[in-house]
Amino acid sequence: MSKRPDTCIYFADTIMQQLQKSKRKSKIRQSLWKRVCYPCTLVFLLTLTSWVHVLTWEKSPSEYWNDCVTVFKDIFAKTTVYELGKGQQFGQTNNQLVAILHALDYAMDQHGQAMLSEDSFPDNRFVISVSHWARNTLAQFLQQDPSSTSGISTNDWINELYQELPILTLDRLEDAIPGWKRFRTLQAGEMFFYTQKGNYSNHAYLKQRRMVVFKRLLHLVPLVHFQAYNALLGYLRQNQFSDKYVAIHSRGLDGQCSWRVGPNLTDDECHMRPSYIKALLRPHRDSLTRNMPIVIISDMQQKQTIQRLVNDPEIGPNVIVPAFDLPNAQRTLVSDMILAAKSSIFVGPRVSSMTVIIGQMRAAQGASLETNKIFVRKTNSSTILSSFTVVGDYEICGECIFYCNVTATDMCGHKPVYA
Figure 1 (cartoon, rainbow, N blue to C red):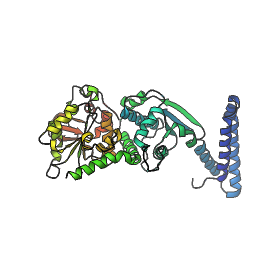
Figure 2 (cartoon, one colour):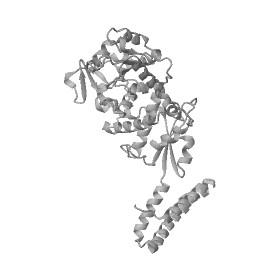
Figure 3 (cartoon, helix red, strand yellow):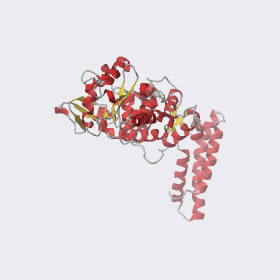
Figure 4 (cartoon, helix red, strand yellow):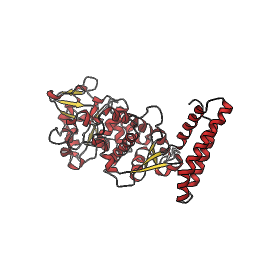
């Protein structure tokens, strides 16, 4: 529609004001207004404005009727609000982030929206309203450090996030989306396991969504979470290392890593032995990258793993442990993820939600998928897929960070993470 009739907008605004007032009326009067008075008034006004504009603009009644219908649909469209955060949380921070991502998937699926627009704000048919643990998880990634002297409000991230994605905190809901709303409550556990139920026959949808979401989220991460990364760059230059580095994510997962990987895959990723790391890096260790530093981020549950890497005569001199080597850097969970996301090559266990999310962050920033050494198995020439990269005795599935159950079922592990 090239031009919307001003009269339609005026009448629509008038009816919206009446709807707002009807909230303060008794349930009987409110129901009478919505079920009888509002529809009759709407039809009357549509007809009236159509003929008014026919007399003044010389258009047919049907053309003005269609214009007005479009205006009223836009203004009175019900927004479905998916509430997330009121129930019990599921797992730790990155599991909670997965649940939020899956809530967005669920809402898009419910409304038949396959992909997120890459250059415009999503439509307003739905919004994810986050509170409690869901709000706190997003704040951990996006909120400015309260101790900062930058003058930026610690809650500015809420408005900025809503400009990028259909996600809004509960306290801002009424101001941002006035009028009629339909509410649905989502549970953390249900959302965490949502995409594991085989809803995606084509993983390209999920891949496109994650690429767009993480491009937008990383754009909003405040500078405080980049302090450790900047400190690392300074350390590398001071010690005459290349700015390009390998990041290894070592996770103990409370002793459950091998069990989660399962008996059908090697559990090298759970122990990060020097031989495994060197095998994966061999194609990259040419004359230009022989001194490529290796940065280890860890939950420190496997200190012997770190010690083995540090003591290895070949790669040990290149190993950097931010927890020890960058003592003055302000480090957080998010800053560790930024360190790994900025790496040239990334190695981590497939059964860690943090690992898979970092892999998706790297892809969103343009990193080649084959540089995510996450979904790895011993070479099996009978089942090598064209999307696999063969590195010595290992095969790597780069696409598997996006819903591996469809990409390569036997690469997911016993207890996979479908982030």
